[in-house]
Length: 212
Image 1 (cartoon, rainbow, N blue to C red):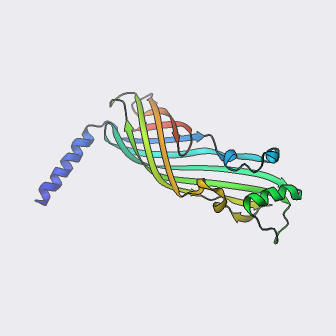
Image 2: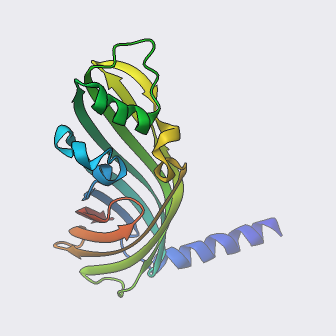
């Protein structure tokens, strides 16, 4: 009886996968814009004192088609942002202190500050493909849910002062999600480019897609 059930399961899976050409898809992408400026506005009065830098959101996604219209997969995304500023007077320091609740009893509060914000996202996703199998184009709708790791740190003259997770607000939540719509065009049966618009992660992203 067990052999019959096992044979039936394997037959069902082989029938399902047999309907799909090149079921494995790999996407490598970059996207933005960075929300660092909006998330860490300290004071409009001092915006000229701040220097923003960092990398665009970069990621890799893999998924496997169970049917021609649906695939399951996983995604990893990394983004890094940084704000640099100098404090040379007590008024500007007070603005920073009010924002991040620093304790200045143990160090000289004047100097060069660096706020580093690395962020990692791991998600499982499901993709719904809207065009027929075998087309050079692929239009899809994606839903993702997973884990968000945000570890902002503030440095003064290169020395780590404080971890700022409790001051960041909603973006420090451990939950990661993504809702997006994407379009890919394949120059060959395997290789193409794609663009994506979504919320949760980069608003706009694009890169290379490959299917095997």
